[in-house]
Length: 142
Image (cartoon, rainbow, N blue to C red; front, side, top):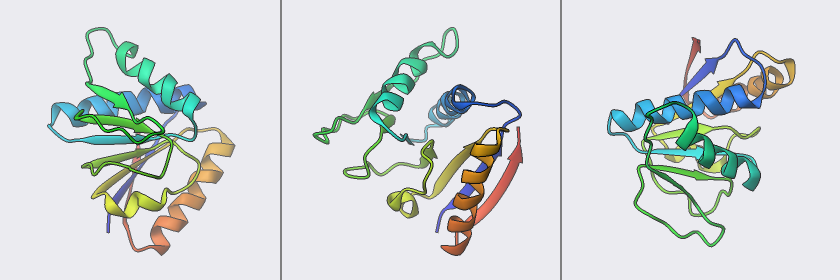
């Protein structure tokens, strides 16, 4: 079972979740971990692809977006919105509203929760789903 970390952010909105995902992916990459960022749709994947180049001056996070054809490249960070052909990684950062079916294949999962009520309600459902599946849960106020 995975260790699932819920990061409770003080900010609101999807851009806050995306920005924190970039910082978390950069930290994991610098610690020589591989990362997969799961998003809800193709537009979210494209936005994250852009953000990983621009979220901080001087940042460098080698990454690629998994195409719908499932073509794989050897990057330490991948971004995708499909539940098919997800590469094995050390960390899953989940930015979708649901628990991905493949989450149990990852040793660590990061769930990013902003302070807006909709995001908190959806994260409570994911928290209960992870708990019911027997994962180890941790909560961090950021």
